[in-house]
Amino acid sequence: LRGSKAARVMPFGPDSLTRVIAVTSGKGGVGKSTLTANLAVELASRGLTVGIVDADVHGFSIPGLLGLTDAAAAAGAITRPTQVGDLILPPVAFGVKVISIGMFVEPGSSSAVAWRGPMLHRTITQFLTDVYFGDLDILLLDLPPGTGDVAISIGQTLPHADVIVVTTPQPAAADVAERSGIVARQTGQRVIGVVENMAGLVQQDGSILPLFGEGGGAEVAKRLSAAKDAPDVPLLASVPISVPLRSGGDAGMPVVLSDPLDPGSVAIRTVADRL
Ligand code: ADP
Image (cartoon, rainbow, N blue to C red; front, side):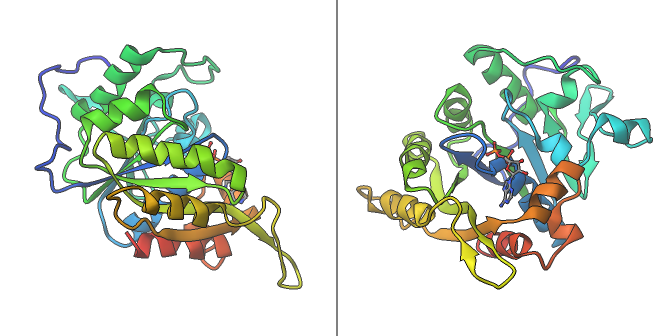
């Protein structure tokens, strides 16, 4: 980020009126970013002012999920940050202010971001301090999967943040998902709930095919609740496997807007209701 001032105050500190919710997972590919993008759009559609920081620096996918693509830019949309004086203004998609490392990569390039810890920390800190979000009701952070540098860095920078853990129904995924919740707690963050994603495929006859097993979300919630002195961690929702949810992500059109009756949309609204 060019033109930024190092000394600016972090606007999302403990005194801030913005609720910060970090979305984490034990491993990649469980739908963390898809859920974060849809949840943000759902909350914005309810009249809240919402921002997303895509902190998944190695695997950023939020811009594409929200249609902030090179193709949209070619059609005249503002898909990248604009600089006004020393302010960096984030682009807005479906009412959500969005910043992502993907917006600082050359258009059309497939260059990988191969940064180590200190660089990642600096970039995330700059996203939080130098990007002008204005007064937000909710800031969602899409964390990288696992318990690496960024998760720890965010935990130290935003120790008052709430955390949602996303997992699949596979019992084997529960271990790594639980660990990401434990690391969040170690930095002082509060785990407010678990979302189980890819929880069964609803078939034509109404029966449910548990493609990825069953019970993983409830198991992670149970284990995180059972830790010593831990508050109760609820399973916020089980989001089924949904073709419209997937294709909406591919098309950059969130399913909660395009297909509100889809079971995936219904489950995401349940998460929003329970925040
Ligand atoms: P993560 O952020 O955890 O790496 P993504 O959000 O990128 O995961 O999702 C991984 C893939 O799974 C994407 O192709 C996405 O469209 C798909 N996906 C996510 N959730 C669902 C779901 N409930 N049903 C069907 N496909 C899903």
